[in-house]
Image 1: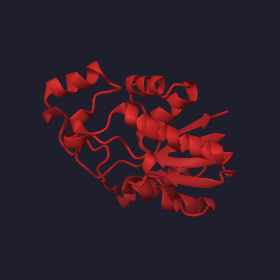
Image 2: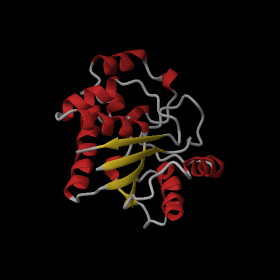
Image 3: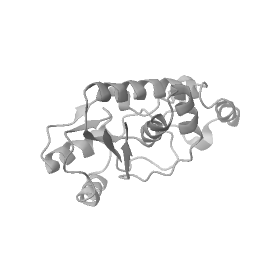
Image 4: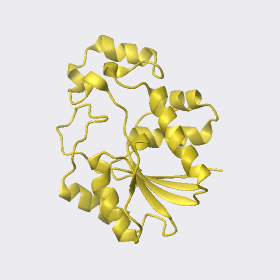
Length: 186
């Protein structure tokens, strides 16, 4: 199975905000720019497009499906970005360092802001991946988030969901808005 992962366009929010599961919008210009950049970069043999239910992903996934002649994207809550609880829409600089240190000390099990742990997110992303395997999907496009992309890449490399969660949490974030990552699964 081949998954072509696409990160959503830049959200229309101030820089430096923690926005995980917050449903923030994207500007039409950033969406149009991402669509233009993706025009020749995506496989033509994909059978479906899946999307996080958050609007910053749907805003790209819907016109992308039309551009590729595919059915509207299948929105799946398991693809949503991590819920940072009370940290959501706060400036990273305003989050107490003791809380960030607590998360850094236990990246997999600590719930930042009282939200989700990386392990909880990894479990739901793994459930999405398993559903695609059961459907015998050969090729699909997934419009999602950097965290989800890192987890899918880690799940490809590890049998244990906990090991994948640890790898994803420890992997530096280097995925551009509108960036593409293609993963091959057995």
